[in-house]
Image (cartoon, rainbow, N blue to C red):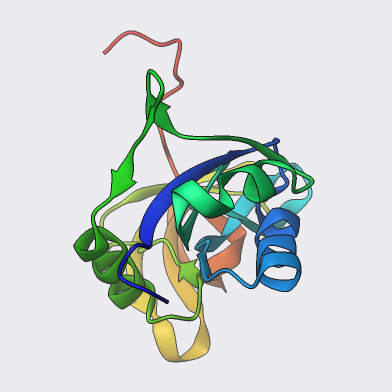
Length: 176
């Protein structure tokens, strides 16, 4: 790229970050940075892995704004180049470099929740589904946790899959 190029933030249509990035790379040949996060989301039936854009609705591309702006805006999924008034906002190269370093250029970061000893959890799968428990041991090598459950009036320690428990978060509508 020449010295006249800079990084810009592109606003995309919802859930179009991956497609728009690919089109900018293949149709125009622009370098694009669009990091994703992969995490487990709780469902009634257990947990499922989900991949979403780290910055939903936004991607970064390096271009010469004066010569490539119109072509970029014509790409499917592009809404606009982010700016202030009529002036596009240049993203400092250091910010993009720092983000790339954090995601190790793989563009997908896997986020794994950490469960701590003493933490209250809800069991969401298995024979103890629906019960609340307290984590007594974490067994990362086996991807399991030992939890204390109250069963028939007595406290028992049982091992369950780490994916079968969720931290006991306060309800968003409850008062502190």
